[in-house]
Length: 85
Image (cartoon, rainbow, N blue to C red; front, side, top):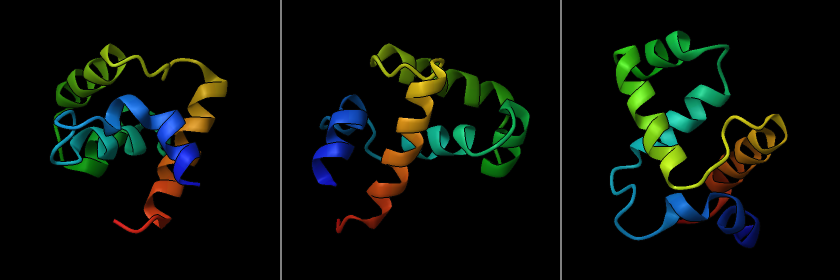
């Protein structure tokens, strides 16, 4: 499971990229809600903050706009929760 998470979320797991977990948290909120507004409300953030964070995620090479890859990203985020720290 650890290898699966690393292969899918690799760019976000690199040292220094997501020190506070905000990119992981944002990605999970976006993937588990019906839109950016709902994700922003869930996170308690302004919609533009979510858009900015998604841009940072895209810049790291994660294909969040591809439906097939979105499913893998969601699964990897869920699996990541099950792994010990």
